[in-house]
Amino acid sequence: MRLEFPFIYLRLREKLWVRPVIFCLVAILALLAAGATDRLGIGELTPNIEHDTVEKLLSIISASMLGVATFAVASMVSAYASVSSNATPRAFALVISDDVSKTVLSTFIAAFIFSVVALIAIKTGYFGKTALFAVFVMTIGVLGWVVFSFVRWVDQIARLGRLGTTMDRVEKATEAALKRRRRSPTLGGLPAEKSTDPGVPIFADSIGYVQHIKLEALQSWAEEHDAVLTVAALPGTFMAPGRPLIFVRQNAKGAPRAQDLSDVAKEFVIGNDRVFDDDPRFGLVVLSEIAARALSPGVNDPGTAIGIIGTFVRLFAIWTSPLTDSERQSDAQFDRIHVPLLSVNDMFDDAFTAIARDGAGTIEVVIRLQKAFIALCATGNPAICAAAAQHAKRALARAELELKLPDEIQSARALAERLH
Image (cartoon, rainbow, N blue to C red; front, side, top):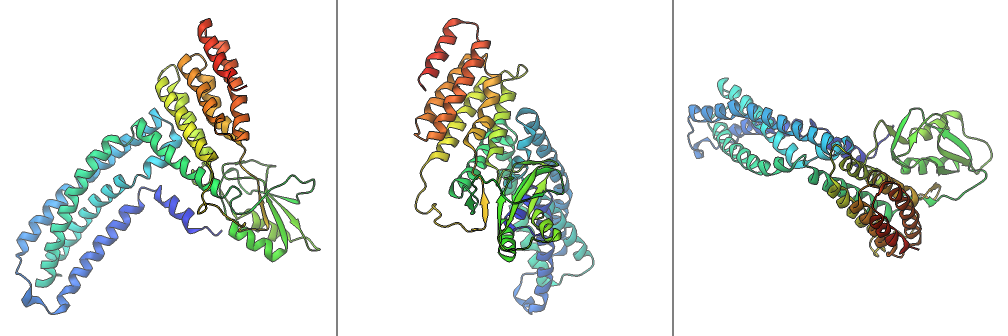
């Protein structure tokens, strides 16, 4: 199964071990390069550095870095646990991809590996005069880089795992996914139209969420078999038995072989979890989960829910904003693939249903919801306005069942009536 490099790169960014391994390899290669300097024949030009001097510096680094790295891991794990308990476990992938923390942890581990390997090489007499001087310079550089990284990381770790930081990360990931989908609403294909005969349904071999669709490979397959494909499962769709991934309609006479049809299903990446990259709705769901948790009786934090309502207004405003000339795509890249558009109603359901349900008894949340729907309707987008009016009506109905004071109910009704 072929995977595009961007998708692989984004998945590797979520792995904690990748960057430490790379940094350790760089440290070992640097020591090998230092050893090679003995062959340059410049020993008379390099200062004479005592073995004890370098060994003491390396001993200090090796003795301290392992403990510091362990402390860093413990702090990061504590921050990750805070994300799951204070926000939502679905935001874990975004927090663990924090570049600063992974770089600092990688620096500590690489410094430890550098010092241990260098000490072994010195004790075995691997380094000559020139190489020893090169190792001394590298050691000073590593020590300075460790100090700089630690000072930089202290500020970062104080924010990592905090609810506000997590919300900002989820908003940025959702905004990026929305912008990508807004520039290419059909993922580079043609808009899907309702058809009485979409073609032969192709089903998934596994159960899980569609994470990525390899449209380039599907386009090549369709051209080779003279077929037209209609995607039935966008990224974020949960694939269960009996639900088709895609439909294949053959233009030429003769149906493709069963093996050829099974190759089509392999171009869909299916996993146990949803990812943010190609699935804008997932970001809306995660933000809604954070708001719902904030509105739970055990937390009782309506301010967080109100903040997320404002975030939704910003995100949907981005969705409705006009495209610039540089963002606009003129022609479809994949003219043999039909892809359905995202449903605005579904996006509103992802964003506002849980907040309207759990915040129905809190007047400040009810008022903020109605004002958000008014603001979204003011964008002038018909689909957004229709969805906003529908959800304003639902939110009002829930509030009328939960609110006790007639004045509060009347205030909510007055705002809801402005949409009509």
